[in-house]
Image (cartoon, rainbow, N blue to C red; front, top):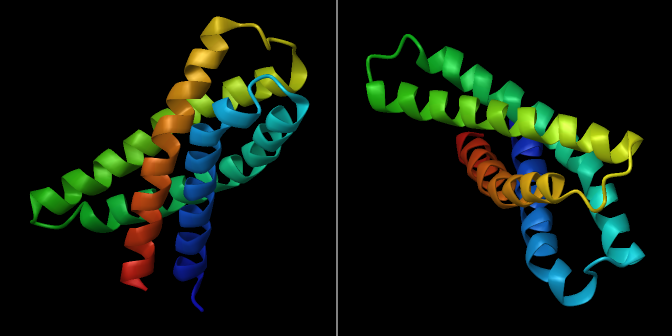
Length: 134
């Protein structure tokens, strides 16, 4: 199994896990220790996934940069910059969660909702592209 295929599989699995947790969390764990523990564990997988997605989308963007097909290069650029924006939202919020206490911070929870709704879409899209390409 090639590296692209492994990365693609990782992104699809993490994206699906985050989507499921995001949907099911209000039903079983809203504010409970079990629900928070799952999010804190998923954060590590999300961080690695963001690094991998930044790498793969940047590779695609650079490869498509010289392509005459503007559609492909635009799609590659959107995926890369979308992933970069998501990383810029994720990492400060994750570090803030790890090193400070802002559990009742409405702004932080709003950012987490944005991250947790966009990340699965980007991860699954990039993961599927990698799986198809390998």
